[in-house]
Image (cartoon, rainbow, N blue to C red; front, side, top):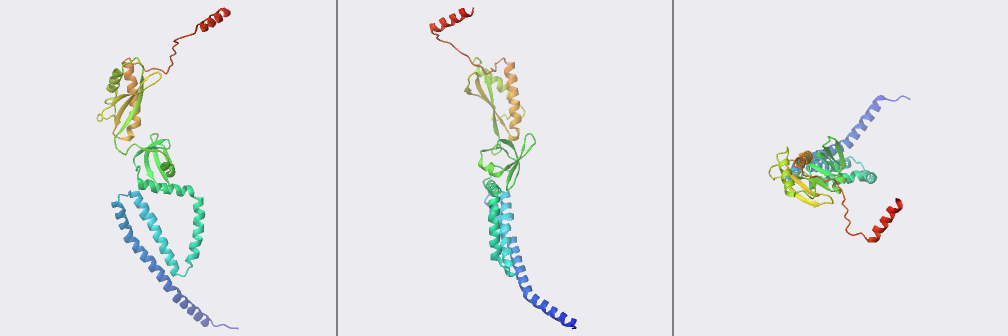
Length: 294
C-alpha cells in the first residue's frame, strides 16, 4: 500500500495550525499577565520603599520586605494567574504545594523561628551593624545581621554566629546605643586605710590614661564593706564601646601601681576570730589534755 507524502504533509500542517490557533492566544494572555505584574512591581516597589522609609523602618528590613516578601508574593500571584491562562489546573497544584509547605514547616521550625526573630530585630532595632553588644555570654562588634543569624567579631578577632532566636530571647546589652559609656573597676583596700587618701591616689593615676575621658570626670566611690576589705569602685568614662576592655585593663594596672607606691594596703581575703568568753570547764579540760599528753 502506497501512502502519499503530500497528504501527510498537509495533515501535519493543518494539525500545527490548529494547535497554534488554540495555544498562541493563551500564551499571549499569559505573557500579558506577566508583563502587567512586572509593570506593577516597577511602580509598587519604589512607592513602598518611600512609605516605609518615611515611617522610620530600618533600611535592611525595607530591603527584606520590598525586595523579598512583596516581590516574591507578587510573582507567585503572577505565575498562578499566568498558569491559569494556559489551562493548567492551578487549584490542584496549589493544594499539592500546601501539603508540601506544611511538611517543610514542621521540618524547619527552628529556621522559621530564627527568621521571625530576624524580622523582630530589624523592626525593633535593639542594635545595628557596628554596635558593640553583649549577648549569650559574648561581647563583640555586630558585623552582619541576616534573616537567620546575628554575627559578631570579638576582641580576640573571632567570628561568632548566634541564631536570632537566642538573641531575641535572652538579655542583650548594647554598649554603643548612647555613645559614651562608663567602665567600673572594683578595687579593695584594708579597713585601716583612709578612703579619702586612696581615692586621691587612684584618681591621680587614672586621669590622663589613654581612652579615659576628662568629662565626665573619673570618680571613686565606696561600693561595699567586704569581709576583709573596703570595696571601692573606680568609675571612668570612654568615648566608644570598643575601648571598654582596654581601658578596664589600664585602670586595674594603674590603680594597683598607685596604691603600692602610696603604701596603701590591698588586703588578701582573710578571717579574724575573736574569743570573748570561754567557760572555766573548757580551760580545765584543756589543761587536763595538756597534762595527759606530757
